[in-house]
Length: 563
Image 1 (tube, rainbow, N blue to C red):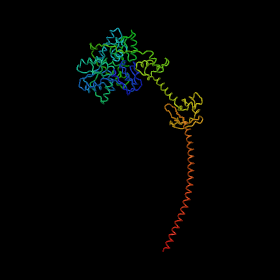
Image 2 (cartoon, rainbow, N blue to C red):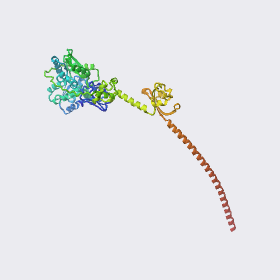
Image 3 (cartoon, rainbow, N blue to C red):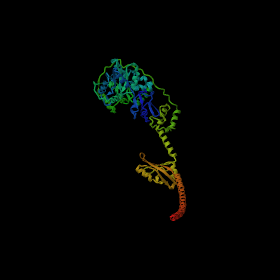
Image 4 (cartoon, rainbow, N blue to C red):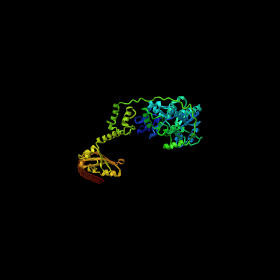
C-alpha cells in the first residue's frame, strides 16, 4: 500500500494538514515528513486531495497500461460512471476518443457490473436478519478489515462492481487485458488482490489519464456515443446504491458517506443495533464523485451529480450468476497502547503538567494533546508538532537571548510607549523602577531618534549618544519593524572605550607637545651651529683670496724683472 500513496519529501513542509484531515490518523511523522501509515491507511485518498503543497500523489498502474498498449496486446477498459465529470471538462465521448486512438479495443461502463451488485443487495436486504454493509467501496472494506474486524460478518460477501464487471468483460473478451479507470485510490489495491486470477490487469485514476492527455496536448475527438447505464450509473453518488437497489426509503436502510460518519456508525454497530438493516457505506463524503482521483473544475457535488445523471439511459440485463461471493480477512494491526506513565512523560515534555494545561488546540493535527502524546509514544508523531510548545520554546529562547545579552534593548510602539526594556536597559535607565512597560520613553531618554525612524522607516545605525544623566555613552542601532508597528533599539555601552580613547588622546597630545619641543630645540641648536659655521667659512674665504692675490702680484713682479 505504501507505493500507492507516496509523499514527496521535497514538497512536504511541516504543515500537518494531512494529519488533521485524516479521520484515522494513519499518518506517521519523521523529521517533519508526513507519510502514510500502511497498517492504518484505508486509501480513502483524502490526504492527497487536501495537501496544500501537492506533496502526496496516487501511484496507479498507468505504466502497465501504456506498456500493454505499446506491445500491441488487446485492451478492454471498464470505465467508472463518474467519467461524466471526472476528466477535466472533457465529455465521455472525448475521453473515449483518446482511448480509442491509443489502441483500446473496447470501452464499457463499470455500471454494467454495478447493476448486478445492486440486484444482489436487494436480495440481501430481503433475506438477512443481521445488518448488511455494502461492499462496493474498497476503502470501506479496508476500514472494517483494519479497524473494525468484528464487523466483517456484516460486510456483504460479494465482489465489487469493478471485479464483477471485469468478470463480465473476461467472459466476453477472454484474450484481452482488462483495465479499470476511475476516481479511486483504494481500487488499485483491490485490483492487486485479484492479480493472480487474471481478471483485472490494473487500475488508472482519472487524474493520471488527464495528466497524460495534457502532456500529449490531446485535441478532443469524438468516438461512438458512450451511453450511461441505468441504475448502475447511480453508484458513484451518495444514495445511488440504494436507488439502484430499489431500497431507498425502505425500513432500516441508511446511506452513510465520509469516514467520520462511518466511524460513528461502526462504533454503534459494535454495540449491537436493532435499527440498522442495510447500510450504503462510502468512504468519500458525497460518494465517488468526490474521490481523490477526480479531475473536475466544478467542485460542487450537486453539479457533478447532475452531469452524470444526464445520460443514464441504457438498461442492462441482470445475470443470475453474478456477482461472485468473496471472503474478508482480519487485517487489524496490533494496537497496543502506551502506559499512562509513558503518556504523562510525553505530556510533561510539552508543558502539559496537568489536565488544565492540555489546551487541545488541534494545531498538531490531533484532536487532543493526549491523542498526540499517544501517537508520539507509538513513534507516529513528533513532540515538535505541538504548536504551543514550540511557540513557548522559541519565546523562551528569544527571552533568554534578550535577557542575557550585555547590550541594552528597548522596544517602543509608534506612539513611543515602552513595550520592552531588557535587564541591561533597566540597569542603565530605569532609575530604580521595577516596571516600565507602557510608560513614555521620554521619561527615561530622548525619543527624538526613535520618532525619526518611526516616521521614515529608515534605520539609524552606529550612532554614538552620550547620556550625561546616566554617565553612559552608547553606540546604537534603531530600526523599524513595519509589520509589527514597533521600533527597536539595540545599544552597546562604549563608555569604557570612550574613556580609553580620551586617555589615548591625552597621551598623544603630551607626546606631540614633547616632540614639538624637542624639534624646536634641535632646530635652534642647528641654526646656531649653522650660523657659526657660516662666519668661519666667510673669514677663511677672505683670507684665502688675500693670499692668492699676493701670490699673483709677486709672480707678475718677478716676470717683469726677468725681462
